[in-house]
Length: 259
Image (tube, rainbow, N blue to C red):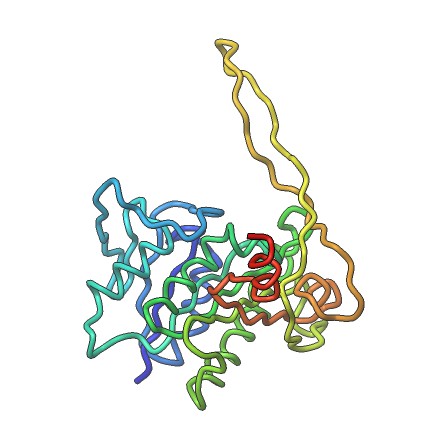
């Protein structure tokens, strides 16, 4: 029987996580290790300055007290699994909201997949894009995301993982019903347009504080359905191969000359 390790960055009680568990249970044994609270935009961070604790919610379902998604994968692989009995795949999600373009570098969802492939385990990060401040998820739910991840995991289990070591699949689901989806589109990560959205507020004693807001999902236009943004915007499921080697090989010779 195949063994699937699941995590996320929205917390152990997230509806997206529970939908993922429901979808993948028929495919094999499922173990869940997820953060105790939301850890969105925590990036690929590990907790080094305080102890962490597994808290068992039910059999094979744990929350990691104040841990990050990367903590969850790192500790699960080292403490819940043996070298002889490792999971066949790690799935991170279903994230509530997109993880496209440069947002991948912020994403706790994507970072859990990064940690998995660093540890030699194939991984997929899956995110449900939402529209109208989340109304699309209320209306359409996670059905399309569930169908998509079941298809991908089945394909992997029936054959093999399509990427070499230290690379993972980043999947983004458009905010539409299943019947409207045009299928899968293999994409590259696009270029996000960022705004400086930080609100200024004052507490009852007049002390100023700041709250980083959620910017609009804007991106730089390119020709054709080549980026994750364009695919999702045109009702496709975006599948992006992501590598951890961020070296810009095209610039090595230029940099040598500059040095």
